[in-house]
Image (tube, rainbow over all chains, first blue to last red; front, side):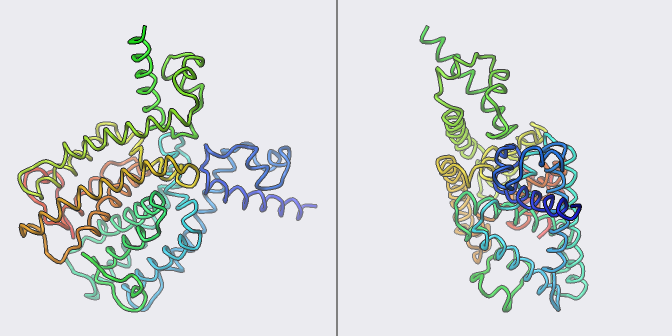
Length: 206
Length: 206
């Protein structure tokens, strides 16, 4: 019985994650959650005291998954390969979903930052860690001479994260993944990233 | 009486604009609109058939206001002054609101793109026009030799809009306007914009 409870709870969380991702927190009703998860209202409240509590677990799990994604995508021999693979993985993820829902952290940052300090702190911690990981790669690239020494790795890491989030936003508004792809190409161009992994991005500007 | 009706309608729209901006469309209830505008439910439905119809008028008016902002902020003798003034105006706007609500177009792009094609089209038209205006400035800058000839004005205009939207997003998640300010400084650095208007941005990287 306990195992069954755990499995049901996981199923609720998986459904809630997908629907929060697509519709946002305010745009998701208890009725939507019941329909998406196939679990009765009483059961939902057995596992989570409120929609807010459920949302917090969805966000913290999404954060943990993203940290795994960060580690797995920032792979490669040289720092430039690591960045190129990271960009490529981001593009593949959003193309794979046909842009549906975009980035759950970006969505929640814009939807909830003024209204829920707990959610805002989780989102902020995602961006802090994302920036820190990229800054480390850039610092290594500067030390090895792969990237110009006059670049400020902290400012550039922030710039990369901002441009990726903005590129996702533009692509969703235009319903055209090229808007994200081209933003990633410009970022790649800024750091002189070439080679196989970014070859598909075509013209690199900047 | 007709004048009074028009004034009331304007008051409803002003209140609705502020609350949609801060809370999003899904996060705003009819009850919120009644409280914010001080108008009775029957009166709201006298002026607008639905929350969706009201939201559409809010968005199209916000778009018209933004086009005026674009024209007024892209001012200056040289293209680089025009861009610098544009960035400065964006920063002043968001600092003046203490980042509250961020950018209504960015918010709505992430909240509604998958769910309301009419809203998405209005938002998309905002980004298209914003990019077009900046591209024109960059084309002039390239012709006059102010900006490197190898820059692709179309790609760079997209990059600027994406980075501004992403910078606003990061600043809201961190509750720190510096995240937007520093993104604008990096953009300014990319185009070698210096001088008085951008002096306050400090170190320019890129």
